[in-house]
Image 1 (tube, helix red, strand yellow):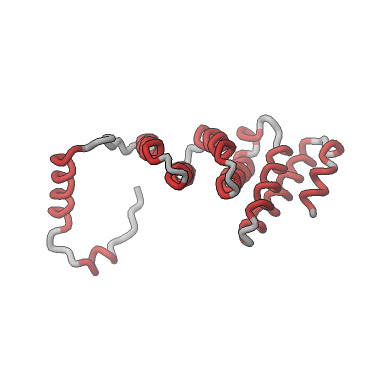
Image 2 (image 1 turned 45 degrees about the vertical axis):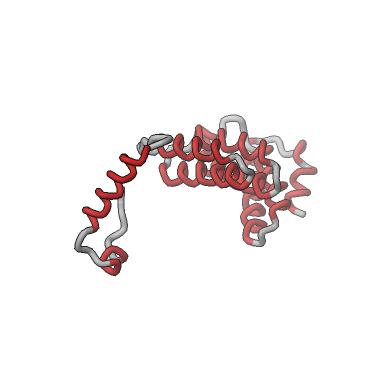
Length: 173
């Protein structure tokens, strides 16, 4: 209901601060709807929140803008609006510098492509995402390269028990 009221009153919400407050309220509704897996409500609230964002929001309200776009992409994917989810992915991937967030954004679109039978595109996208994170992997590594990598891993793990490997410290880089 709150999102519907804000949407109905959108022409009256004109100041920048009011519009940002409305976008934040819609984001709160989005988060609550996500917790209840109410994906059509998430989609509606996220799209309404996007409407309230100012044109320069990526520069001035980056965190809010990122959260709203992430929710919109997820909801669009889960509601079957794949084209809009892809368009939102492009916005998110251009505006995301944080490696963990970038990986999550790419992962979400890779899942979309995989679940819609676009396997080749999924592989290409995954490789492109890894490249943006500094990991360059070949599209077709060949048996020799795979065997070489497997041998290197086995050498690195030699003498370590599964229990010891499980309790290694968390990676930081």
